[in-house]
Length: 162
Image (tube, rainbow, N blue to C red):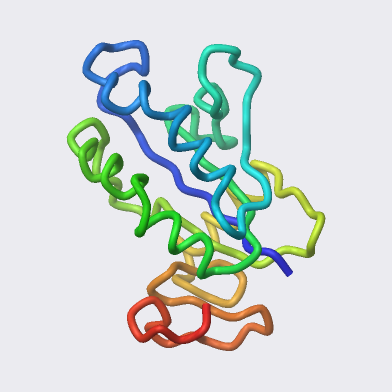
C-alpha cells in the first residue's frame, strides 16, 4: 500500500499578484525537493510550462481552491517532508497569503501500489473527513491509521512507526 494526500488552500490574491511571489517563486524548488525526498512516489502536475506544479487544477465543485496531491510510500516519508524540510518554513512564511479554512483542508488515505488517485477520488476523501472526521478511509497526521485500518495514536508525536 501507498499513502495518498490531498491538501487544498485558497489564496488571498491571484497567483500572478506580486504579493504571492514568496510562494510562487519557490514552487519549483519545493516540488523538486519533494521529487527527491525519500518515499516520494508521484505528485499531481498540470501542463503549465512556467511552473512545475498544479496551480491550474481544481477540485470538482471547488473552483477557487488550489490543490496539492501526491503519493508516498509511507506516512513517515510524507510527514518528514512536510515538517522536517524547507517545505515547512516556506509554508509558514506564506500563511498571510492564504485564507484560514474552517473546514478540513487536508486528508490522507491508503491506496494500492500503482494506483494514481483522481481529483474526484480526492474530493470524495476530503468530503468524507469533513462529514465523519478521521476514519481509516480518510485521516490526518494527528489521527492516523495504518495500512490495515488500525489507529496510530499520536504517531507523529510518539515516534510510533508511521
